Length: 263
Ligand SMILES: [Zn+2]
View: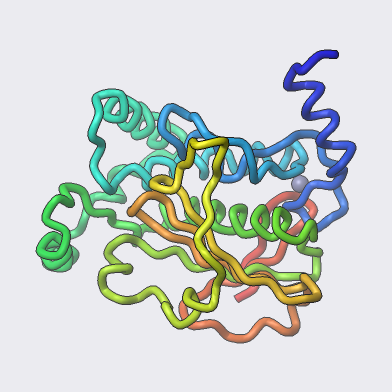
């Protein structure tokens, strides 16, 4: 019996035949790791959170995952030369995939005072993110939506339908220190999880917590990526019941694999 990745993926698709990102109407052709391998040191991640995807959805999100991987490396600072090399490579790749990205992410003069406040609380923070620009925002939004769809599928086996919705918000490490993360909401979520394989855990790179309703129609998911950024995602099985969430952006899945912003 062969244990080739192809065989494993084929078997996976038999068990999970529909792409979990584009509304529930497209056959899956591949097994997607969410978060992507590129997020982790040495692109090395334990098994788990593997979800069915169509080629279109997987391709669509690749460059955005690269941007998220780069942002995830900002804090804490790398401690090994291997990490340092990897980060430089990620910077180059992300800037090539999304031209203008690095220029946009340089802190503006207006942000400098906010940064020095941050560095008083986190004296080791050499790098602080400017996540305010449109390019980085667009990529992190797509990354956040994908993360939320995958966690919802992973925890419930439900695919968010075409008339369902995903509300997301991305928090930077500066937002976190400024108390902008809604802890009242986060506190109702279950305990923190990560990917684990035997004794190997990546909790310092990625963690998630969640709460789902008994009907599995709604879910709240919170995931953190090192100490650089965090994603809050809410899932609704019907667009019409989405409440107005403070600072949240709401999207609906589409058969093209793109997510359409509705609010
Ligand atoms: Zn798809």
